[in-house]
Length: 121
Image 1 (cartoon, rainbow, N blue to C red):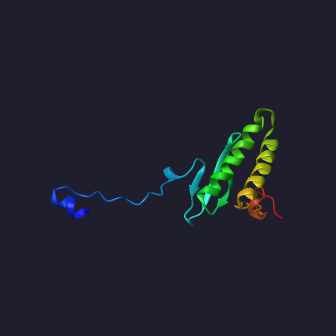
Image 2: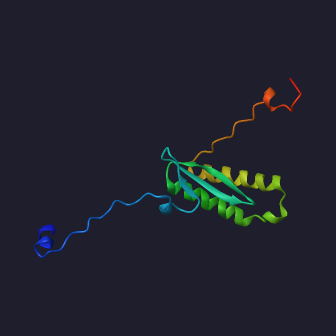
Image 3: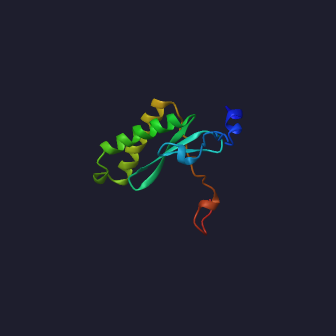
């Protein structure tokens, strides 16, 4: 094919490899530097981390599950702690369903730096 096109003075356009940019990922999903995928969702007034997944499909599935859960909850009648509890329950359910994991935040260290000025342990 290439020789035939060149014989008549044309040229062959080479296909490029598919780009793997953020634009190509599903809504709510981003790729980490380690090659895994994070899912995030706005729940209430805050952006919430859903979990880390091996594939963008898993991250997207978790995002969709939590979004459905969020849409079924009347957030306007819930207090801040209730909104967080509802998200935590939905997060656990979704992450277990698709096989991801949640990175737990470390407890805040209690050192003398954390105490008010003038107070010592």
